[in-house]
Amino acid sequence: MNFLTLENVSLRYGEKLLFDALQLYINKGDKVALIARNGTGKSTLLRVVSGEIKPDGDSYKTYLRPDIRIGYLPQEPHLHPSNTVLQEVFLSEDPAIQAIYRYEQAMSRHDEAAIAEAAQVVERLRAWDAQTRAEEILHKLDITDFDRVVGTLSGGQAKRLALAKLLVANPDFLILDEPTNHLDIAMIEYLEQYLLHPQLTLFMVTHDRYFLEHVCDQIVELENGKLYPYPGNYSTYLERKSLRKEMEQTTLQKTRKLVSHELEWIRRMPKARTTKNKARIDRFASLQEEARQKLTQDAMQIDMEPDRLGSKIVEAHYVTKSLGNRLLLKDFAYNFKKGERVGIVGPNGAGKTTFLKLLSGELKPDAGKWVIGETVKIGFYRQDGLMLKEDKRVIDVIREIAEYLPLKKGLKLSAEQLLEHFMFPRSQQQVYASQLSGGEKRRLHLLQVLMGNPNFLILDEPTNDLDILTLNVLENYLSDFPGCLVVVTHDRYFLDKLVDHLFVFQGNGQVLDYNGTYSEYRSGDDFSFAAQTDTKEDKPPSAQAVRFQDAKEKKKQLKKVERTIEELQSEKKKIMDWFLEGHTDLDESQRKNIRLKEIEARIASGEEEWFVLAAELEDAME
Image 1 (cartoon, one colour):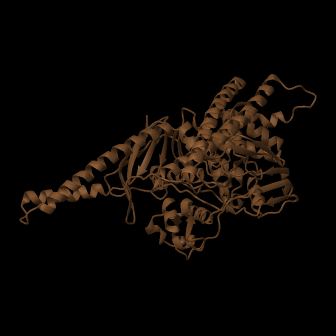
Image 2: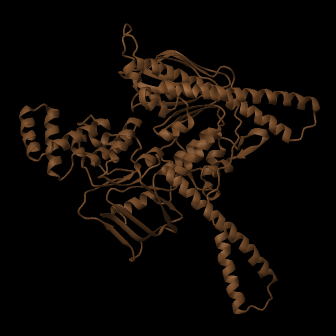
Image 3: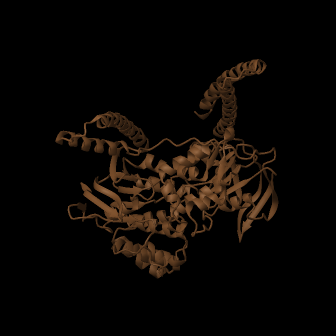
């Protein structure tokens, strides 16, 4: 059953072509994701699908099945500011939803007579299942203050309310624009499971790659005004896009080769221009245009060299912090080590951002203290950003921080080059900051932080409003970052790719120190820490608990061995590079050769140890 058809859809925004004769078909049960770079028209296409915007011309076809319920979640939701939260959630012409609203309203007033009367209507309409589902949605999205006026909500709270309202209405076809923004990880995982229902049809824009992997069965990419369909999930999309780019590259190389032959002919061409010659010249012009195509380039490698960290980095000495009557951190103690990469996770309101502000020195603890080493240079990317000087051009905003970043081997990366690396082409660098979109301003703030060349980097929700291409650039940059990294994010893919150590905020000031990735923490026994803290001292540990502790210890040992091997491989590479540079110092060559053999022996021994530990870990987890 066809739910949506788009044919020959084109649209311009001023001089910019967003879509060129797009075709898109979505059938019942399809779960389709749209991905593209920021500013290329993702949200606009969703507005075309929802009927908010009409395409250019009169030869297009847009069909949206009229007998289905459609739910549309824009990035900026349309809510009634004078309504209470409860009124807004159940704002619907559906009699069943109206009955649920009256029932919930009576429950919140504890009006027994009204509860009984509303319950009879719910019973008559057979809406109890819908009522139970509505309560679950509100609970999972942490919407509990039903009497609060919508106009007093923050942007994130309003987005969650709009999403809850949409899910409570139970539409057949969901059109969602970045639905995971402003959700914590538990909420994202709940929404993921909700959208997997086979009867739901879905068309969404998201940068959450685990969402794309687990939920979607088709991905369409908007690139240069065209839609490229990729049946399958995110990993299939990556494989098929890679093949497409290889084919384009091959075609481009052939075109450029042909252009060189044609150019050679044109230079030798006699001055008399026959019709045949003119046709060949026209063909040359066409080939030349093809050869100018800009294909996606591999991200350039940036070998950063921030100031060296000393032995003392950052130490927390039994830090306690409350805000109002909420205890966010209690007796937290930890010493950061060189090269640590820590992810911070937990529900909204648990104190994650407050922790970062304490760590950066922006807030003072109620008790305990932070000690920051003399060599530490903190860079803090805030979720709410900094006030940009909007009368400054993009390039000047970055140059105010520094003209260049120092790289290894005495090289430098200019402000212009860093901006280009993060998707600000030279033409856009001359634009005033006031002309940037919200997402572009956040990206510019991120570059302000990086241009300061910190050696201790703190990131608070850096992935919000970034497209997948920019996320990959940022991840590649951070993968090579040689200092300490502390990041709060709801992006599970980002966490797994960059951090191997977690601080899990569990509420009431409790923080779990977990050595492992988010996926490891989330899977199996690792996710049951809260329950394990309730075990009484006189109760002997279960066999399952013993296996769990053994597995946890094996994981720590594995991580340690892996880090040692990585360090040895890095040292080995430096020695090999030294030999390749052609040095003639015989004594130094002999010393390096002896050290190289030692390193290779230690790597071989480490690899053997790794295989043994991996086998023991597998046994412990069975």
